[in-house]
Structure formats: structure tokens, C-alpha cells
Length: 420
Image (tube, rainbow, N blue to C red):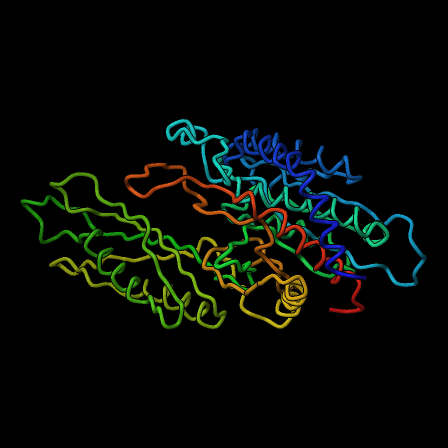
């Protein structure tokens, strides 16, 4: 097989059809699929299922364990035809999500809707991650066009999370229950950035722990009996300073105090206060140690009333997504993309990201590679103010075809290897 000739065939095929794919992206972006907009998420799920049904995929809608979230979507296409084989051909899981971070009210306030400007398409979720879902369609179509026999003899699972933006753990559990033992890899189609003509593929992500800190103090009249009060806000100030001090950039560990609330009126010693805190790290060992350090701070109390009442600190771990560290299985996947890119005269590099994706939940079960979607910028941003240096989320239109070509040829190589 002359790889360059096939690459040229795929490129011409995708470029000819690109207006069609761009229109699919427009339809998806024009549906508000904010995580809390259950109706919108389900509407996008139905549109997505229709697009894949045209390619022979069967849809399964699975209710979220949270009633205010939409349905997760699983799409299946079984092997068809091809030469009989004593071995079950490998299955690939292609991962995306349906939800975005933009409420209808935010979209309206910032006039953030679908629009084309030069080499960019703007709109809610255009790069995170509706462009990634369109990338999956492009790759599957290109595989069928250029390698029909390979495409037909493998099983495909496309899984779309209804609530990825709020780290719903039920999706990964549902997905893992549905993936067969023959699954070769999980490929995540989050945005794949470009820098200096080099595609960045994600090979590791930080883990995240989310805590709530509650402080119980004792109220008192701030003028008459200040000395018998135990100020919960002051105690919280001590505690959050201790939390913030755990940040260690050399160890790639961050602790962020994101929310603080407390008290009721200014003439009363406050008897309650709380904060919400997140912790992130790449190393599983550093992550676990830091979680223990955070929880240990509830044993400390620095604020005591004159008659001996000490503020009480309670810290609860509400959510946890373990780190996805650099690992051998991911590196083997990355090496396939790197080898194919090298043959095509393209460049790829591995990237470690501080943000999470569904890959955090899959890497321990199957080889996982992320960042396979198109390039863009300003994810999670709806504001536009050029004088203040603000711009809205956009996807780079020229990134689609070359990235889809690379993904297609790398996936074909992956499927035809006896083992990873």
C-alpha cells in the first residue's frame, strides 16, 4: 500500500464532502446542550443518533443516574462480511460527549451563536466537543471509503456522555459494561491543539478531587459579647491558607479555593462558614498524598473563644477523578499516530493536560489516547470583547481534514496489528 496515495485519496474525499460535515456541525451547535438543559442534551442525542444511523449504527439511550441530566448515548455497529476468522476482531471505542457549559441565558447575554468568520467557526461546543463528534463521522466515512473490508469486519462503539462537563462517573461505568473484551482501545475526541504545525495528542491528564469545607463556630453579639464568640469566618481563613499552601508547582500539584461563604450580618460573630476547594495532580501518588493532607486539616482549630469554645472544621471529599498518568499502553497508541504522521510528513507530539476528560476513567481498563478532535481555542468562553482581549470558543476549519486523514490511517494501522 502506498500510504501517500491513499492519504491523497482520503484528503480529496473529505475535502469534497467538507461542506456536508460543516452543516452537521452547524446543526449540532445550534442546539443548546448545556448540561442542565436535559431537553437540549436529548435533542442533540437524537440528532447524533440519526447521523450515525445513516451509517448502520444502532442507538441505545441510557438514562443518567441523575434525573436532571440527559440520556447518555451508545451507538453500535457490528462486524459485517469479510473473511471468517477464528478470532473475534478488535473493537474500537470512540468517545465524545453531548453537553456543553453554556446555559441558554449565557448564550443570549453574550450573543454567542453559530457563525463563520474566515477560517473559523464560532459557537457553543464547536470545539468542545461537537467538532470532535463530527470528526468521528469523518473518520468512519473515510475508513469505509478507503478501507471498506477493514471497516466492515470490525465492530465499532461510539459513546457520548450526557454530562461530561460535570464529571459524571455513571457514564464510564455504563460504557465499560458495554465494551466487549475484544476492545483494542478507547479513543477520545476532545480538541487536539496545533502549535507550530504540530498536532498535539493528549497522553496524560491531571486527576481532580473536589472538597467542601464547613466550619462551625459560635455566634455572639459583636459589640456586647464578642469575646464569647468563635468566628467561623476567621477559622475558615486559617484553614484556606493552609489549603492554598499545599500547592506545589514543582510537583505539578495545585489546590484552588474557588468558593467562600459565611456569616449573616455584620454585627454578629459568624457561627458558620464554608468553602469549596479542588485539588489537581498528574502523579497518582502525589494526588493521594495531597487528598490525605487536605482531609487531615479538619483536625486543626486556631480560633477559640475566651471561655474555651473551639471552632470545628469538617472537610468532605465530594468527588474524585483519579489522574491519568503517562503509561506504556497510551505510549504505544501514541507511537502509531507518530509513525503514521512521520510517513505523511506531518508532526505530532504528546501533551499532558491539567483538565479532565472521560479518558481519566478509561485508561486503567483499555489503552487510551485523547486529543483526536479538531483544533480550536477558547473552550468554555462565551464572551467577546476584542479591546479586552476576549474571544469566544471557535474551531479551526482547516484542521478537520488533515486531522481526520491522520486519524483514519492511524486507526487502520491500529486495527491491523496483531497486538498493541
